[in-house]
Length: 81
Image 1 (cartoon, rainbow, N blue to C red):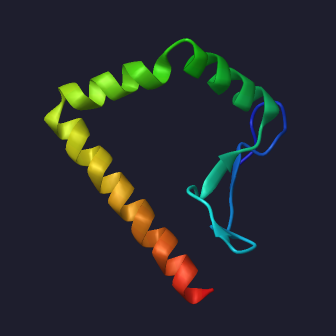
Image 2: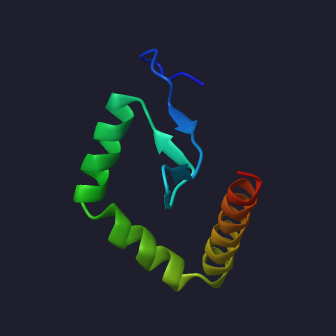
Image 3: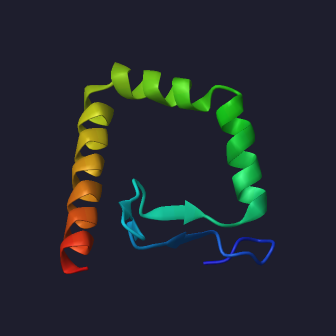
């Protein structure tokens, strides 16, 4: 999907670059979105979000499950490579 400025918002990619396995499966690609997220992160968003996850059992469980699913998808892609 494209952002309101016409750029693709994000893209998925294969987790193996050459002989190295990368950690992510998706990257933001809209330069304006990347810039906005960088600014938000520099303002402490990562710490704030981490604190929110730690403070909520439900969010903590969802976070663990999301990471488990992402790892499973990455393993499946790598095994098919």
